[in-house]
Length: 449
Ligand code: ADP
Ligand code: MG
Image (cartoon, rainbow, N blue to C red):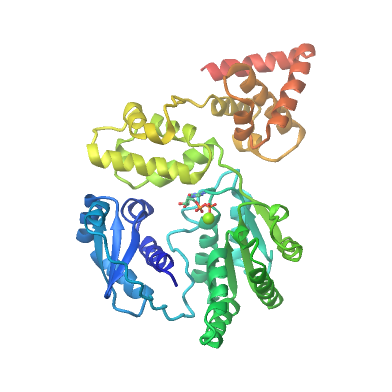
């Protein structure tokens, strides 16, 4: 195991014991840069972080070290400045492997279903994920989850794994495809240890009831490893063991993967997570700040401001909140208003002044007018009344706001062609239907109030 991986294991352990926010601020950027005698040299970003860790988290770091290796490592924290003053002598020393333990799932306990916020764009993945967690190996096998980076795939996988661990005696293993590759290529490096390593490998991957393999796209290209994964997959699948795979693209788009693997990936069920819409973004932000001391200080329009400006993925959204926390800790403001937030987040989300989301307002008014919910409008449902209301809402968005067609599409979980089609249809009808003109007039009055 190399250093990075070893320290990552320690970090995973630390992460599982801490609130996300604390982990992100104190540990996320730390790096294992050297090993001197039995002392790990950990680099952090500032003196402030160094002091904080040594004062408050000393025990936790010790615990993480002893959990990740049988050696009695100690550690020392250094800052970038100290590193520069005193270039460490790099001693290449082998870090001893932790003994493989049957019960080590490599799961991050802080990712659960409880703190996975569900909205229109991830509902299918979350519900299917939960049903697989309740009935591993029985329903959809494999479960293939795909979506762009930062949308919650890893979180969801850990949530499934944790659920199974907590509610059954099944053994679970979570790995990234990179770990799989490095475990496998190790077999070819050391001839003398080969037999032992091979046993270790088989033990690790075939003795499980549930295998979660994250970011499968990295398997592309590594032919021998693909063969081995193919065998592992078949072995587990035939034994009715649950396999859950994530990827940043659909099985069809995994260009570098062998066809026989791609075919197998679609044997079970494939679900997609798309970027969060405005409502989900707002819900996630509210969820993240609940219980944190800033939640008392923060003005509601700040939440909207963040939700409106971090639209691409959840990781970006979390980054904004963490940033806000950090700046708040530094300046202790009496309240976090829009001005403070904009200042704090300027470098992070640019100078955008996008504050009120008119699309959300229009969706709400249209939904109320037709006795529907906003979720109905954003859903895939195509019943005549929902479809009609959705098209009217899109039309009003286009006619009365400055929003781009793409953004309107995003808020309805549709692509831009669908928005254009809807607007053209309503535009046509508007000319001939007195009733429609009346409806739109009434909705606009509703929006204005
Ligand atoms: P991915 O694996 O798709 O790149 P992650 O699972 O690593 O994304 O998610 C990025 C971050 O966003 C994580 O900290 C995760 O907890 C958080 N996150 C993503 N989706 C949600 C959600 N629906 N509810 C709460 N947190 C989420
Ligand atoms: Mg991930």
